[in-house]
Length: 192
Ligand SMILES: [Zn+2]
Image (cartoon, rainbow, N blue to C red; front, side, top):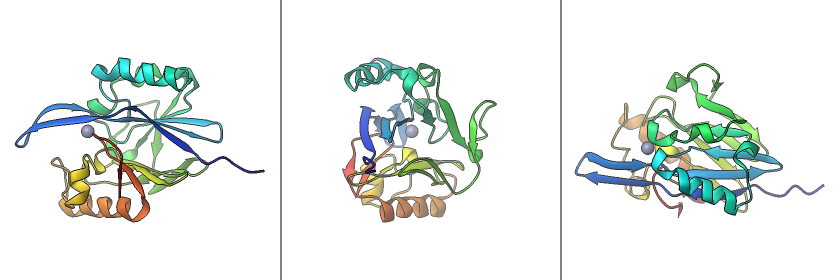
């Protein structure tokens, strides 16, 4: 039986406004993945983006309670502000983020959650940062803040917030080696 490849839709496109090194405004992107009957949301952005996410879900004919997994790329509040929308979902976070009780903990380097949808440990911005690698019509990497903006990728510039510059660069490289299209933490998807 032919399996349909996973699809990817943006629920909201993130934003990062800086004044020099000072972050003035930050909302993450939120991405919907659908693969063989499994529905996944990667990051839920900040509270200010709630209406945008709800409208996008309605437009895609997906009810929030149909979402099976919410993947939190890392435990920063602008990536998890609307987690409560997804009451029936299993929440996944990497061990390195010290996840709270009730979440599914990603222990290893990689974890498959649906056909052609794999979580990959991409630390640097934070110890437990993860990206989602998707093999659909093209290869997509939904990176959270492993790649916050296109500029970080183009200039091989680690995210402004990082605990280890070299580790962060290795993660950007790993994303680049896989992806045709990168969905960054805070902006529009772009070709790698
Ligand atoms: Zn962020």
